Image (cartoon, rainbow, N blue to C red; front, side, top):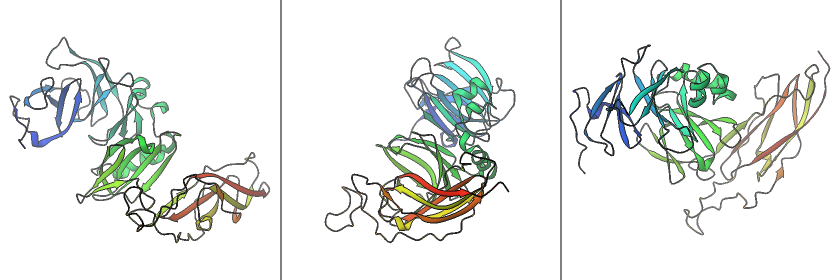
Length: 376
């Protein structure tokens, strides 16, 4: 293996200190931490003679270059793509053209302001736009540049806006902020580092737009390869994610809280009495229910572990030795049966938890029984 060869650039370019890289219209762009310039190679090359382009004269708020992303005006790549440079202050410069060394083929066409970005990998492409992880939340770049920093339309994370702002406020200084689109799993994943060696994930279902939180994947970086999701942790391990029915043989605990519902009358209190879940779970008794009222999420019941053994991954486990995966091919619908479930309030819902390692569970609906409890 031969090391890459870089030459011809000003002394500030040192390959080992480059912070990140982006490919744009057949040309590779590099930039370093705490710098206001980028460096670029000749068309079709990633090494060789490097040239510097200084952006310091174009910015008005200071800061340093954090991200360069490609703004695609359609769902593909082509001559209408624009180069977007995002600084630590959130100031954003948009350029058109393909050769920064040719004044006739490179020009700035816009300057915008968005929230401060959370790192060089804190973005991901979805369809014809980029989602940028900022201190204002997770924003749709194409909407933010058109409607402004404070437009509610630009918030890709509008449904979890408090969580998407609180997390950067608490953990924005940690390394590991990253976004990845995982089409095979219908997920858009935001990695949220909560310490130097642990993280959680904010995960959006790309088919419906709902969000949830994952824990237990202490990832530093993610990658999608051949439609499978992998992550690397702080110890240098590479892990296959979203595979099988268990967490490396251990149980997976799931917890869902549907939206609180006034059940047609905000002025009257309701008393929950019972609930049942419609799903494909094979052991309904393993569910735990908690009636919740008026946005209080305090839990009162004990979660019972599903005693089933972990299933095996098809075409990987040893035939006639490993336990079979208990997820039925036809995904049968089952009910847990009515269980007592108590809560009194103006808006109510039912929390559902399960701790299992043998089945991929589809949760279709929750049915409740209640009675009016007056207006006081």
